[in-house]
Image (cartoon, rainbow, N blue to C red):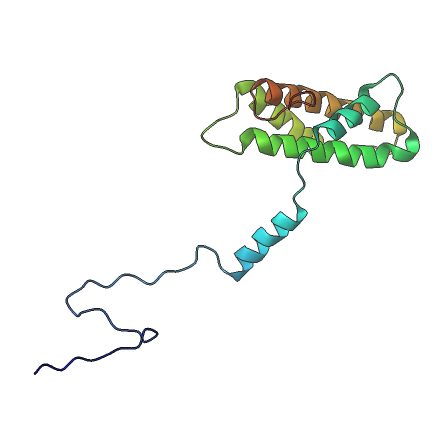
Length: 152
């Protein structure tokens, strides 16, 4: 008569001694890395193409932007340009065109410029930011990295 041992389903049974051991899994990020990812997800905002075009119109349109809103407009333009630059270089499988790389580099230097205290110079910087943003968004739409406002 042979003896059989019943093992409850929730007991851990070690593998046979002759089987190779599988290395223990380690997470790809530590706690600080996970916090960083969580913060980036919380702060992420989808690209609002209509808002970009509204700000471009306000900056490059017939009238200069009002003095009261120029600082906020400048911040939004910098944000739009950063977001568009990130989209242009985000996927290594689809590298940006030479034009996109040039616009991203030009945009980076413009984003880093301090806003001048003089209103006319500030408007000049805002317009340079807007022209680079406009060119970059057109290049991204043409390359089908993003959809334009009229596309569905």
